Length: 117
Length: 118
Image (tube, rainbow over all chains, first blue to last red; front, side, top):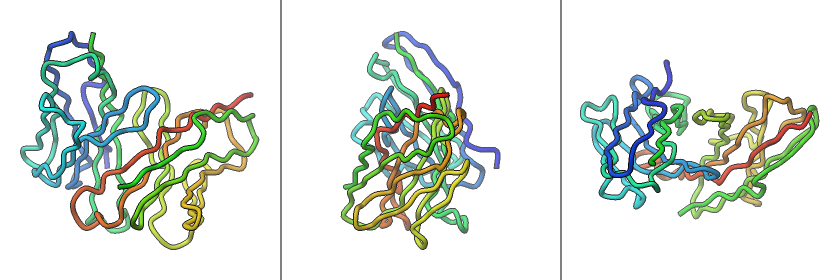
């Protein structure tokens, strides 16, 4: 496995602009997650896909946020009309409950840092 | 609903000394338990996990954790720390009931910053 890949790793944007992050999960992992982590806090769940279907969204995911996983492989997280409060690290993770022995292990990428100025 | 409490936001310890990072959880159902480590400006790396079986779980980098159901705890230990262990450590819980479908997303504690002093 090559691991979960995220890009860009860092993004600085002006308030009001749109940003998009991409996540490439571990190959054959059918579950993909997005988390948000702010300074001094643990990651907070945002949303979750099984294959191409978005099955759950946290109340943290306002209508300015949209996530897609069109072909059940990579995913994008778009934030529209960014606000300073959106500044955080956005973590992508993947898992595969069908893979024997992995249990419910979720593997994380290195994250995408967003700074809204 | 489930929650995770990491009792110490910061733990300073001298190099080669033992360390214990505390984690307590609450859940109305059986859970899976995890410890993740996060080095500066990086994502999370799995240290170890408890799914079932032996309550003493060994992980990478010499860490181990013990699941105590009666005390709802999953404390992380290392007998001798190294300067490279300086990092943020997160305890997390996942609801067993979701393992067959739905979200098995993790609920994290706020983290414990392990500071190794030379």
